[in-house]
Length: 339
Image (cartoon, rainbow, N blue to C red; front, side, top):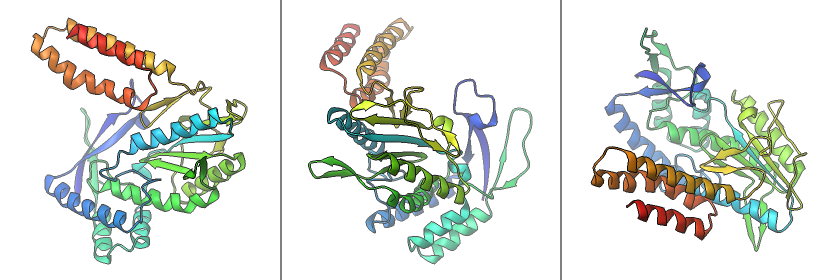
């Protein structure tokens, strides 16, 4: 298998190679074949309970993973705040997620979940013969073997990544008990989606044990977390505690008081309120409506931009944040005015 690779920027004004994400351009026939295999493998794993969808929602079709995880994490934060409980939430970011997955880890996961040997052999041959090259405006590299990592662009990569992460999460989940939300409800201490892993614990010592265990497992897998892009939030008796900090990879994790974090489409800061998000959404609606109105398009095309570009963009913050009805009515009034 050969693939033409290209780098796309992950951030504005990207300059260093670490600020770019490699994408593989593969042939259509291979994508169709591995789409079928990925679909059957996903069905096999979920129907046999090998992937816990309450913890891992990466690569699982039909599951609104971002929305469910973001809603549950926000709910436990608000409960800790209102009921004056202790809570630690740590958002961990994995460095070079797809590019650091060992092929041996994929084979280990396939064996652990009793995937038929013929599939194991087929995938082993696929990765062992995978070659890539990258092109720029000035030159094209030689063909290189993909000795580590899985390619972004391959249709079977998401479920492979989910399997590897599930092995790691299952090995770490015993380090802390489930978070008791009261009323007979409990939440697993880990939430994962792609390379975003969140720890939720009501006891500081359990949080530290979980961090240490995950750090050890990642080192064993030759993967690592990025402390600078990770964040922590500690609540003590219902109030944000800025003094409590945690470390991973021998570096301190910044708190949300120092730097807010956006995880799974939701912003978290030290206020643990959504008041600012409502104002930001209203401002976004006003600026976007003004931009659409000033553009040189005919009226019917402006309406198309409003219906298919702006409104879907506004629906997400209205869905995930606790925005008051007066702000929602103000947004609706502005849309009606411009329409």
